[in-house]
Image (cartoon, rainbow, N blue to C red; front, top):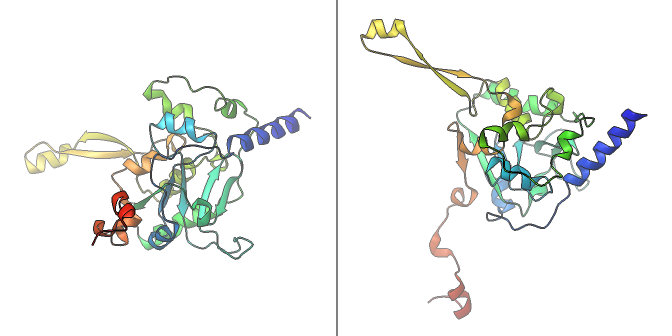
Length: 264
C-alpha cells in the first residue's frame, strides 16, 4: 500500500511541476512553419519552456533553455487525432519518454542544434535508440528528486549545479530530457561535451622529434547533461530558421513605418 501511495503522490507532483505558468519569454518565439521546413532527423530542439520546473532548470544551468527534444521524423503508429504525425522523442517528469507532434511547441522559443557529418548508419541507430525508449517512465518513488523543485532555489555553487539538476541517474528507463538525448548520442559515440584529457604521445614525439600531445575523450555521465550543453557544444551546428529562409532586414516593418503607413 505504501508503494502505491508513493507512486500516486509522485504522479501528482510531477503533473504539478509540468503545468504551464505565465512567464515572459527571454527570446523571440520561433515561427513553426519555418521550424518545420528546417528540421532534419537527428536535430536536437532546445525549448525555453514555461512550466513550473522550467525556472529552476534555467537558473541551475544559467541558460535560456529548460527542455530538449530529438527530431526523428514521422514515427510509425504515433500521430494526433487529426492525423498530424509525431516527429519528436522527448522525456519529461509526467509522461516519461514519449513522442510528440511539432505543433506542441508552436509559439515557443526554440533553437536547433544539428550534429555534424552524421553517417547514415549512425543516424539510423540514433533514431532507433530514441524511438525504442518511448513508453519508459520514471521511478517516482524517490520523492526528494521532485520535492526539491517545489522549494525556493537556493544559491548553489556552479560546480554542484549539474548534480543538483540530475534526476533518475541510475537507469536508462528513467532518463530526463537531455539525459535521454545524451544516452542516444553516446550510443553512437558522438560527442556532446566530453571530458578531454591531454596525454603525451611518446611514440609520435620520438618519430617527429618534437613534443606531441593527444586528446583522449572520456564519456561524461549522461545524467549530468543539461539542455544548454547542446547549445555550447563545438560538435553541434546552430541552425536558425529565419536565416535559413533567406533573411532580408530591408523587408522588416519597424514601429515608425507602421505608424506612417510604411516608407516610400
